[in-house]
Amino acid sequence: MFSPEQDKISTIPSTKVTVKYGELIVLGYNGSLPNGDRGRRKSRFGLFKRPKANGVKPSTMHVACTPQAAKAISNKDQHSISYTLSRIQTVVVEYTHDSNTDMFQIGRSTESPIDFVVTDTVAGSQSNMDTQSVQSTISRFACRIMCQRTPPHTARIYAAGFDSSKNIFLGEKAAKWRTLDGQMDGLTTNGVLVMHPRHGFTQDSKPGVWREISVCGNVFTLRETRSAQQRGKMVEAESQELVDGSLIDLCGATLLWRTAEGLSRTPTLKHLEALRQEINAARPQCPVGFNTLAFPSMRRKDTPDEKQPWVYLQCGHVHGYHDWGNHREERQEGREGRQRECPMCRARGPYVPLWLGCEAGFYLDAAPPTHAFSPCGHVCSEKTAAFWSQIPLPHGTHTFHAACPFCAQQLSGEQGYVRLIFQGPLD
Image (tube, rainbow, N blue to C red):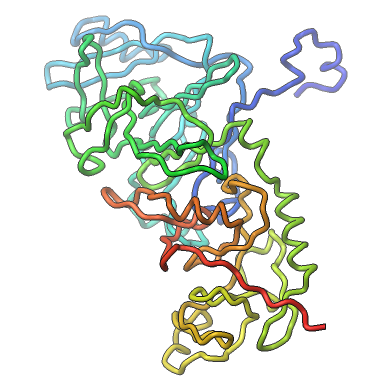
């Protein structure tokens, strides 16, 4: 670390300002991992300009098994991608240093080449324990992002990452092919899918189309299933450039890319805290118990508090927790009985506690939290709820469904969210 004195006498202006390219935020975590963010395993990861460029670009291609190809594979200082075509033929593409880009690698492996360690997201789980028994579908070296070191700092995504030996191996079963100009390209087993929203990540955002990104960064339509041998059609009009709000799916976890510029327009945690205090200051009341309700502090976002607001998801009426209308057959289901009758309007539906969405990066605007996702009860602004309820997120190997960005639970009900109706104080 520099001391302030060293910084003053430094003649290199770049030491004073750290350039941030953007952030990757994992969907399904409301601000941090259940067991806390540690090291390279966390719910969000900032990409900053490196002191020294570590990007690579393709250079020489060898058809194996020639001595050069074998040397390229065994050379620990040389990045290379090996395409196994058959038992007797492998094509090796050597990569050379690129002083114009910084490379960031994402995957399940904890080996040192991986900058951001990502594990499978279990919808609505409060703990990582649930994920241990599940066989992971996320690749150990899932993808890499190349950021341009000079403005506008374009970020480009490629499937697969280099391992500790600086190699990417596409085995016999992986989909691979020769391009028209004689180069090699391929897809990883479960694929890397990307969706760029239309109109950026703004109040006017609309869902884009999911595409698959190849090892060389080309764009394709989706395969029939995630690991099908047959690749989709190439989409030449589209690019692997990430834009603010691009979603990256690694088959087990979905990441949201936010540019530094986009993040500067996003509400801060301080702003979300001010909105929480504003709701609490209005002293909303339970229309049944007449007790004052309050959203718990952002740090306490797991166990319901006695002042916690609860909502009838069918109609949006907000109450405190009470037993009214809890039919006998549902009492066995515990506090969150599936069907409850609202005392205000008699609508029957799920009755759940409300939680503030604390991950500011998921918000499309800085408007007050007036809507809740169904069935989880995470609260955010109307535009944010409307946007996420329209986004089909990959689930398993061939299905898609809308989910809450804060807990990854599949949305239910007509819209997937409900407008909250608070009762003000009677005095």
